[in-house]
Image 1 (tube, rainbow, N blue to C red):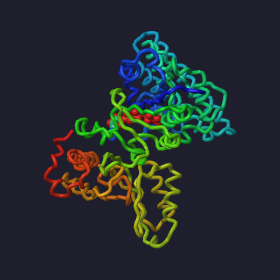
Image 2: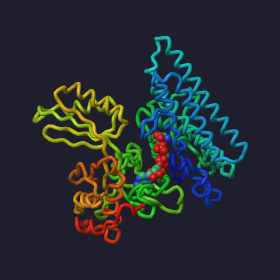
Image 3: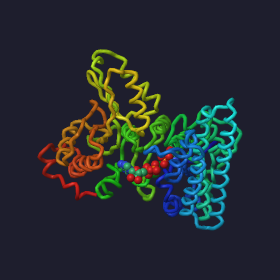
Image 4: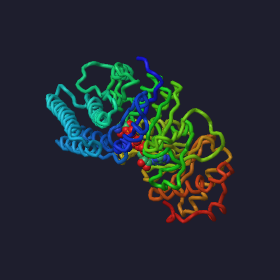
Length: 494
Ligand SMILES: Nc1ncnc2c1ncn2[C@@H]1O[C@H](COP(=O)(O)OP(=O)(O)O)[C@@H](O)[C@H]1O
Ligand SMILES: N[C@@H](CC(=O)OP(=O)(O)O)C(=O)O
C-alpha cells in the first residue's frame, strides 16, 4: 500500500448531520481536478444514530442493543430497529436530492436494517435451545449494530459527492456479509488496497469490523481510532478532525459564540483532560496512535475550511494561561468508614466494584476515613455500585450525591492562582463550591459545584479566567476585588 502526500480527515456525527453544507466548502470549494483528491475521509454516523443503535451516550436511554440485551423488554428491540431506519431515512433525506440517490439510500437502509433484524431474530431463536447462550454473543451484536450507522453515512456521503462530479468511493470497513477475518490493520489495508488516492476520494466508515473488536477495545468514539489508525498506516502528512465549531475556550452553545475564542494550539495532555470530562477533543487512544506515529493533529471547524483551526501536539505551553473551561454532571460516590484510618484495601474494593459496573471515574479524593469517587455514568450502575459497597462494608456509610464538576484547563497553569481566582469568580456569581481539587503541576483545576449551578459556573469561570484576561492573558489572575468589580451579571451573558 503506497500513498502520495495526503491527509486523513474525520467528520464527527454532529457535523455529518449537516454534510450537505460541507459539499460546497470542505469537500469541493475552490478545488478542481487533482486538488479534490489526496484526502481520505473517515465518517461517523449521522448525529443521534449510534445513540439509537446502542444507547444514548449521555443519558443511557436504551437503544436497540440495550433493548435486545434486556430480556424483559420482549420485542421492544424490533421497534427500536424501526426507529433507527426512520431516523436514517430522515437523515439522508436532508442530504440527497436526486430521486435515484434517495431510492438507492432507502434501499441501502432497508437491506442493512432488515438484514440485522433477521440476524438478531435468528440468534434469539437459536438461543432458546439452551445450548447456545445469548450472553456469549452480546459483544458481536454490539459490533454488528454499531457498523450500521457508519455504513449508512459513508454510503450517503459517497452518493452525494458522486452526484456533484467527485470521484468518491464508498469504503465499507464494517464487515457486512464478509466472511474473512481481519485485525484492524488488515481490515484497513484490505479496504484501501485498490484505492488510487490521486484520482479517488475514499469515504471510509468510522466503524471497522476486526478480530479484536473495535467496540470492545475502544467503545464509543471509536471512529477516531479508525481514523488515527488509517493516518498512521498510510503515513498521512496530517490528521484532521472536523467539528461543528472551532475547538474553543468553552462550549460556544453555552457561553456564546462571541464570548469564546479558538484555542489555536494546545497539547495532548490538555486533550486527555477534555476527553476525561466528556468533551472529546480526541479519543485518548486515538491520540496515542497519532503521537506514536509522529503525525500532527489538527482540529478544525468543518464549516470554515480556510481556517487552520487548532494544532494539537506534544509541545508545552509557550506561556501560562487557562485555555478552556468545561464541565459535566457527575455523581459523588462516597465511602465513609471510621475503621479506614491507616488500613489499606478500601480503595481497591471500590475500584473493583466500579470496574465491575463499568462506571467511568472522572476524579477522586480521599482523606483519613472517606474515599469519594466522582463518576460520569447513568444512575443505575452508580446505584448498583453503592449497593455492592454497602454489602461489602456493612458498618460504613455509603452515599451517592448528584453534582457537577467544572474544570479550568491549560497546558501551563503555573503562577496563575487559578484555584483562588476561580473561587472568587464563583463567589461573585453566588455559587458555593462543594470542593476544589488541583494536583500539583497538573493542567487542570476542578471545581465541584451543585448540579444546578453547572452552566452558571462554567460561564463565571470562563469570564474571569479567560474573557477578562484577553488584554493581558498571562498576568497572574486578579483575585477578589477585581473579579467582583468586573463581573458582568450572569443574565447579560450568552
Ligand atoms: N470547547 C468546546 N469547543 C467546541 N465545541 C464544544 C466545546 N465544548 C462543547 N462543545 C460542543 O460539542 C458539540 C459537538 O461537537 P463535535 O465535536 O462537532 O461533535 P461530533 O463528535 O459529533 O462531531 C458542539 O455542538 C459544541 O456545542
Ligand atoms: N458514532 C459513534 C462513533 C463516533 O466516534 O462518533 P462521534 O465521532 O460522533 O463521536 C459513536 O457515537 O460512538
